[in-house]
Length: 245
Image 1: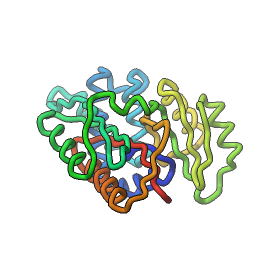
Image 2: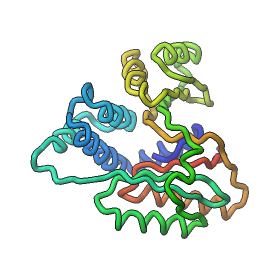
Image 3: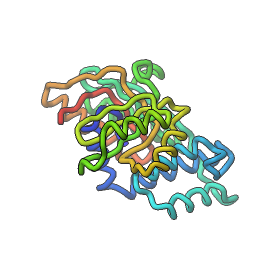
């Protein structure tokens, strides 16, 4: 669930999710529970936030049974899960901008853990808003075309017809971006056309990217992102580091 930085970042994320599928599902389930409780409904047709999380869950290959059980749990009167969303912002090595989105039941646990990782690997956690101004919130849908079965122009026209804001072919994948309010409608329309997604989520997309050249900086940035993503409370890590293929 790492931050957006072209396909090589998404590809790394996909591999991590495959290796740690259980942890990925647990984090999505937590997000789903919050969406149900805050939206007041277990019906994605009446709860746009839940619809967004379900699209993300399906792209991560979360089984439908898991999705249903999670929604039922959130609706159950015995559910005591009480998470709140917290966003931390700061800088990694060489001024790389980093946004960490967390869902936590204990801020006093999560904040020091996140701050420790920033400090340990050559960064520092800053004030709210210190880097988010340099990111745009967008729906991002990635379609795999490694087998070459899909025609680029056809996918582009379908995406734009479904209401997408932009389309980009990046190697063996197609990346479709939407305005946040259009994300659910676009994903549904593309699914109806038979498309499957590598990932589908509303993300913080950087307006510009930074390359790291120092070996130590690259190692520290990699380690910081990996350990942030391994934290049970952290849902998403976004950054503007342009990783090499």
